Image (cartoon, rainbow, N blue to C red; front, top):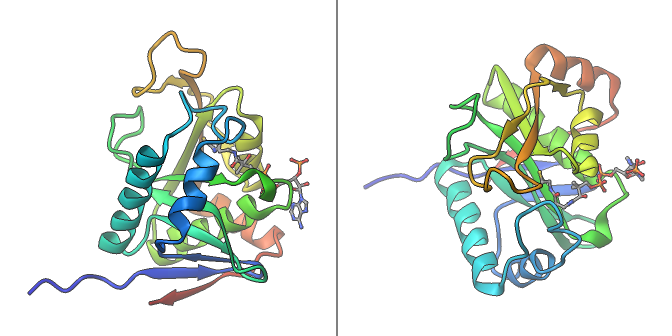
Length: 201
Ligand SMILES: CC(C)(COP(=O)(O)OP(=O)(O)OC[C@H]1O[C@@H](n2cnc3c(N)ncnc32)[C@H](O)[C@@H]1OP(=O)(O)O)[C@@H](O)C(=O)NCCC(=O)NCCS
């Protein structure tokens, strides 16, 4: 009998990063159908594509015990999107690597939620998984996303690359590559007011 690892949940002052639930799926589909949320992806997702992605993130999280967590706003008990850590399956200039990523429904932008949840993910990456570094990448034009990277104290490696899953001449192909190591993370942790707790559920 194979024993599955327990899933880690991360909690901050306002947010819970937890396993996916079936009731998250329709809300995830709504955000993936929103052209503003998907402005820096090749296209919006239809219902089936969104559900397939949620299933993928959910099973990776359950099998690995960490991954792209469903993020819940605790006071409002609402699913607001996903944030977390992921092993990209395609080849990147820094492969093999662990990336940090995020996508929130538009109504939750502008409150610091992405940075708060991402900080919790970095806490997990460095204090629990003991990683040496974490990468993040985004199309050059996605200022909101690279602003999160900068708020986390990540460093622009200046090694822009063409994303292998996007056609070479597409306007979204060129990506910025950011990186944070344990020492840089400790500086962010010291300067920030974020509190994180980890639970094994
Ligand atoms: C990328 C994304 C997650 C960023 O969201 P965001 O709301 O800009 O980022 P945060 O949640 O960290 O919020 C930061 C903003 O909240 C403001 N804010 C308000 N209250 C705050 C608080 N209590 N604490 C911290 N910041 C707060 C900050 O000043 C900042 O505003 P600014 O952008 O005007 O400077 C969001 O735009 C998104 O989901 N985009 C679509 C998906 C996507 O592109 N993902 C990345 C693909 S690579």
